[in-house]
Image 1 (cartoon, rainbow, N blue to C red):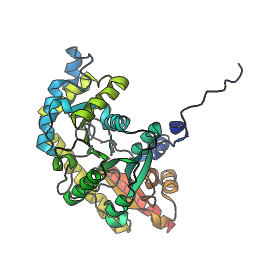
Image 2 (spheres, protein in one colour):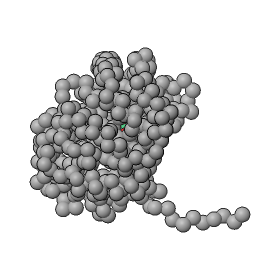
Image 3 (spheres, protein in one colour):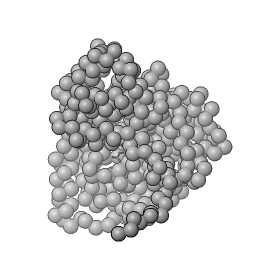
Image 4 (tube, rainbow, N blue to C red):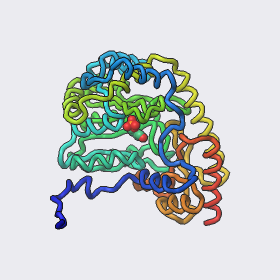
Length: 389
Ligand SMILES: Cc1ncc(COP(=O)(O)O)c(C=O)c1O
C-alpha cells in the first residue's frame, strides 16, 4: 500500500516531549531487578475497607453515570473534609469530581486559558503542568524555587515575571518534586500578588494530607471570598488510590460551572465505583493515612541521613514523599546520571531535568518505595557518585 501522508498533528502535543519521569520509568521496566525510586506510586495497597466498598458498588449495580460533578452524597462529604482539613468552606455545588487531580487541573486550564496567555509555574515543578499547556497554546513562565532557598519560591523573581498577558498562577505546596511546604506568610504573599494582578490561581494540594513536619496553608482558606482560586485535591496519594482515578476541585460557582462544562464534554463523570469507594475513604478510619505518613516520615529521615553522609543533601522535605539529591559531584547532568545509574547500579530515580531548569543538578528520590529499597538504592547512588568524583 502506498505510504499515507498524515494530515498535520496538533503541533503543541506532537512537538512536545514525553514526561522525563516516564522516560526513565519505562527504561526501568525493561531493566530486570531494578530498584524503583522513580515514580510517585505509593507502595501500599488501597486500604481494604475502601477496596471492599468499591467491590460492593459493583455487586449492587452502582455502575451508572453520575451527576457530572459527582454524587451529591460524595460532594457533601468532600465539603465537610474541605472545611475540616483545609479550612475551605464551600457548598457541594462548588465542588467537581474529576479523573484524578490531573483531570481537575486540565479542566481548570481549559476553563481559563486562551491562546497567548501566560501561566506562572513552579520550577522545579510537576512536568504535567507544562505538558498540558501544549494543548492550550498558552505559554508557561517559570518562577524559580531554588535549592539554595530550600526550594521556596523567589517571590521577587515571581513578581518580575508578571506581564499584562499573565492569566494564571499555579502553586503547589506540598510540592512535587521538592517536598517543600510554603509557610503561611509565603501563601499570603502569593495570594496578594495574584489579587493585585487579577490572576486566576490553581492551588494544587494533591499532597495536602502528606505532611511530614509542621502545617501547611490552603490559599483559599485565606481568601474565602475570592472567586479566582481553584483548589485541587486527589484521593491518589492520601489513600493510595492512584488507579481509582479520582480527584476534585473546589472553587467559585462561576468557575465550577465552566469546569463542569469542560468535564461534561470530555469525561461525563468519574467512575461511580471510585466515587462510592471514596465515600468509604472519607467515612472510614483515618489511621491508614496516619500509618502511611508515619512510614514516609521514617523513610524521609533515613534518606536524608544517607544523603548527608554522602555529601549529597540539599534540603529536608516537609511534605509529599520525595527528596531531591544533589548529583553535581558526579559531573553528569541529571538525565545522563539517571540513565547511567540505572544501567550500572540498577537503581531508577527521576532526573531533576524532568522538572525544569532549576533542579537540573539534582535527582528526585521517591519515598513511596520500601525502606529496604531506599536503603539499598540510595546506598548504590552514593557509591556511584563517589566512584565518579
Ligand atoms: C503535583 C501533583 N499534582 C497532581 C497530581 C495528580 O495526581 P492524580 O491525577 O493521580 O490525582 C500529581 C501526581 O503525581 C502530582 O504530583
